[in-house]
Image (cartoon, rainbow, N blue to C red):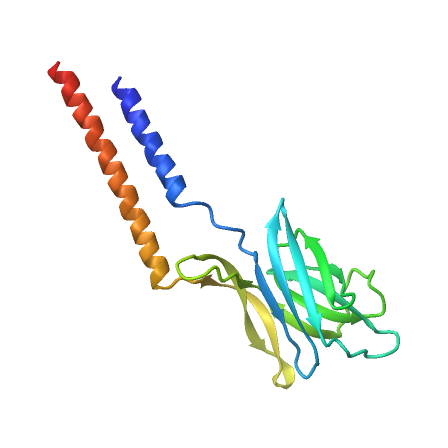
Length: 206
């Protein structure tokens, strides 16, 4: 009887931990603002993790530069924290809808002669790094790997992926929300323990 009671208490505690501390969202659900240096045009992308892949929607404005009559296609690519790159597809009429299985940290746009290549050209027009989705005060987003620029020749900077992470919306509201959940969970566990011991005492007095 006691084993069943204590087993029930443990199950209730585990259930409470799952309820009050749900799994965080995929780390690379986020938004990306793509910008260039001395280049007209910009793009905005949003990523959502669905059924094992990242669904990416992108919209662009004022992509007017063609480096040559041949290089006149805008192609978007993703890159993970290990430097692996994969083509998303061609931006047509300023729009792109694509999926990828790469847990990417960066999206960039190149100018290509065609949209079927598997390797991006060196003509990068726009680039941007994933940022957490802002769900509002008191709601934390999962961390996203962020780049740290490292100096290169001629004073240029090249983004290098490091292990640094950023937490979205981790202010006072988030801290108070976490404390409240912990306190509520502890109070529920205390009530369960008191109830169990009260039940045991009554059984012994019979």
